Image 1: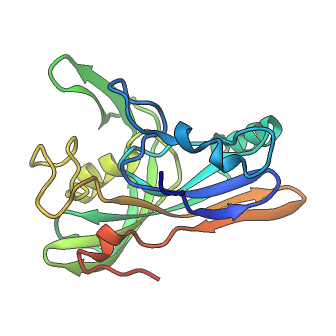
Image 2 (image 1 turned 45 degrees about the horizontal axis):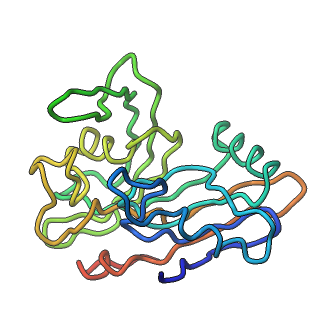
Length: 222
């Protein structure tokens, strides 16, 4: 196994640069998942670290791990209280007319036997807010910076498709093509930055470099 890059480390936290394609949980069909790396990520500690939040299998970038139960409880509470700054980069499959804005679309989960489950905008859904800024356009694609205020499942993916009017490149669920467009082997979403404030300690701050598949499409950041 290729070692996972560590972006931040101290006595109670790790932030790793999760590779695209690596699920957090073991797939039903078997195969590699984050659990396979946890012993390696002990780094001499007695306990294996535990992920505090979730990233989709396709999403790369900053994933916070807690190194003990007390830290896990505190970090989880910080996410719940919206005390965590999250920055994502996404490549949108289309042009975005405005330069920046805020998407405020409540989301709820639906499911069907034919299509499985997905999230959709719904007035009676859970409040979901994402701030965004257009960074660069290239070849009919747009690099967008997303700063989610809430942390709903698939929030950025649905907000891109329904709020910006163009889904993330490669999104097989919310994209109009129903599959991954040419040039994208995954949903093009990257957790580029994470800041977690801590009482009495310096904040946990991590930045994940732009993935190679983003750069291969001609985009740069930072």
